[in-house]
Amino acid sequence: MAFKQGCAPATPTLMHDPYRVEGGSLAEDRFEDVEEFEDAKDELLSSGMDLQAAFEDCEVAIRKFFNNDLAGAMSLMKHWETTSLYHSLGTAIFQFIPAMLTFDQLQISRTLAALKVSLSICNQYKRNYTFVESIGTMIRKPNYVSFTDIEAHAELCYAEALLLQAAMTVMEGEDLTGLIKGTIKVKNCYNSYKECAKILEKKLWDSEQSRLHFQSGVRLGIATFNVMISLLPPKIISLLEFVGFSGNKALGLAELDAGSKAPGLRSVLCDLTLLGYHLVICHFIGAPSDLPACELILQKQLKVFPQSVWFLMFKGRLELMHGKFDAAIITYQNAIHSQDQWHQFRHLCYWETMWVYSLQMNYREAASYANRLIEQSSWSKTIYSYSKASLLLQLDDEITPLEKQQCNDLMSTAAQFKQRIAGKSLPMEKFAIKRCARYSAQGGNLVLPAIELLCLWNMFHILAKNDRQAQCVLRLIETTREHVEGRAYDWMGPYEADNRALVRFLHGSCLAAMNLPRLALDTFDSVFKLKNDLKEDTFLLPYTVTEMAMCHYQLGDKDRALHMLLEARKKYSGYSLESRLHFRLHSKIQIVKSSNNTTEAAASSRSAP
Image 1: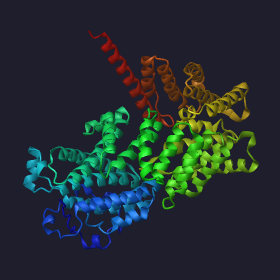
Image 2: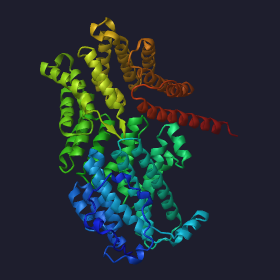
Image 3: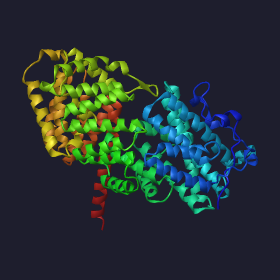
Image 4: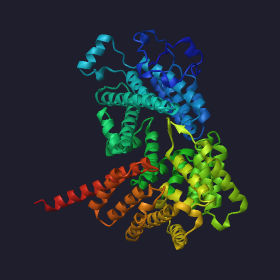
């Protein structure tokens, strides 16, 4: 049975130009308080677009989108974008993706305008209550059984649009106010998803296909919230739980897996979320990844979308995670040439390729990709500039006078591009700027700058998957350590202890990644012999404690590992890249605790009569 969506009674200005941006920030509009239009449904005119037809259009648009035909996908959404739930949301999503990739303020404004249209349409189709009925819902639960399919999907689309709007609000804001407004919208979105879960449980559906599409959306939303919240550090989780949020990673991943395997419009988005979690987020926070599951997802999707830039990028990432560096480079090149509509995807591939060449110690080629990013991408020219300079410096005796001059220029100008996102500076940009200042203070010298970046971006564990390359990097670190500690260098000045501590930390981290925990512990102990002499690089101490803890975990001393991880979290503060380490600490604490629980359960099972 099909359901007429009707014609949304919008204002003449909105209908005439739905994406015209006027006045102040669109993020300041209180869309969570959008007028309910209580009599709107009685005034709707037939639009000729019913829910079933909308589903069919969306399925075609999704196929076009993942076949790199963005223009075709957007064109399909365009005709009904001011009257249809799914067409308006689809238009907003297609505006949202380039906004997230570029952080361009004009694109953010276009996205917010599209979301304004989508939220307005959602409010017209959602179940609306009179004042008396609203009071009644505070006393007793709404009658979810009586919801129509269109009302249910309006609630789901509302939740999805509100989540996108929250992200745009945070990106558009330049201060704490934008972050607070975005947080409030996320809370409203979370409540809408919980409402959708109740609808899914109670409602009697007129169309099985409608139910399946709704179910896939609920799974995607609830699962994403559960996974993301569970990854946050304890202090933030406690605050979120106080205001009504909760996170269960196991439940979230199970729901994503179920959504991935079941039919529904959001099934492919469940796949993308799983790939992003296992191949990007887990790598960043140091959590275990389910690479075999990613392999199966990519095999499935690449059969359907063999040239999709999305799945080719994730395929390259999977090959990188396996230590298959040459294969990863080939796949990233295929992704680069697979489409020419979104240059931002090329930039992501350039970024990944830069690190693959760095892992192969092909620093000049890696620097060429950093240079492409400097010239073409606006995301963080500070990080790009410092990365290129670090890679060229790693050439050591092979660096040419021209390349050395490029390093000087890059180091002197990197700080000029420092930016603020959501009102805050990027921690890695601040770190890069400090290193640029150190470069100047040390007369144009840094110790293993490219290797340090590999370590900080958590690349050593990937490096260890390729034994030959890992041995090459280890020899470089050991040789550099011999030189740094063999005699005093005038250029180090007051940073002699910092430089020696850094090379010792890198040495220990490489040994630990190569599964040599006892050798790594001996090296890490030597870092702390310099702790009282450190002038600037105090971040090395908590980072070293964290690595030592995981070495003890590898050796089977789980209690000591847990104690050291908790110590690293509580004892140290105010150091560079602190938030980055806190995410990793939370992940590693969960790994150790989970292992302890498993051991205790096994012991209890063995002792049971």
